[in-house]
Amino acid sequence: MREINVTPLQTVERAIKILDCFSFDTYLLTIDELVKKTGLAKATTYRLLWTLEKNGLITYDSRENAYKLGYKMLSYGGIVMEKLDIRQEAEPYLKELHRETGFQVMLAEKHRNHIQYILSYNSEDDFEPGSYVGKQRLLHFGALGILFMAYSSENEVNEFLSEYPIVEHTPYTVTDKGKFLKRLNQISHQGYHVDHEETYFGITSIAVPVYDSSSNIVAAMAIAAPSFKLTGDMLDQSIERTKVIAGNISRKLGYRS
Image (cartoon, rainbow, N blue to C red; front, side, top):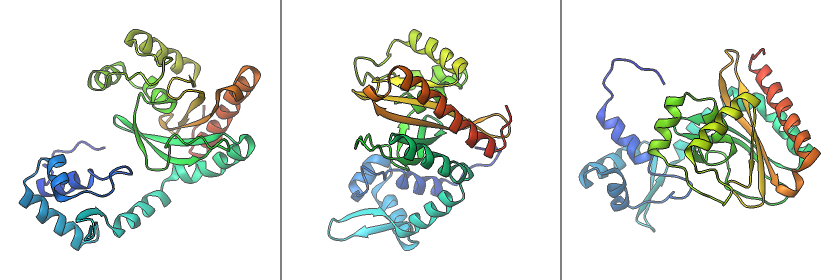
């Protein structure tokens, strides 16, 4: 995001604050719930909701006496998704890997303290961790986010961990900060990250970076499968195959190692 010397419009920021309350899990909200989430006055919230509703960004559900995102958001989302170069360039490669392995295949971008999935193909094992397109997760949740952290500055990592302490998802989650930082260094050197049942029991994930023409990490891709399918030679082969696919996508984006 650019840093320019212009004061943002407070009314627009308040409207965005309302829109940010909605998610896949909380797609329907009453005005009282929105007031509580945003901290805005009820009268202000109502006026903003009516303005958004009038312009197709919010829809009022009279049966539920609640609000949800409007049809125009779908249109905007479609434009964004259609024009994402990374998504367009990566899609055929991820489809190929998914057909080849049957594993879950994911592509994500980093947005400040979160990752957001921009492509996802489900596993033939019906493993559904909620990694659907549009879903956001904190950086230290899963292989993709931790990979991004490994390529972040030390200050960024420390600031993030101060605000969002590591949560233990399974007994294998690395929660000791010293060990966590040491592992990030290892990941950046080896160029990939293997999450062995640290986020989900019985599931192993492999994440690798995707670079652009300026050698910056612009995305990360991962595969996930039952751990018994990713051991020994199969794990090694899967790491190499995932790296090859990520390399192909990077080259399509103009990267030259």
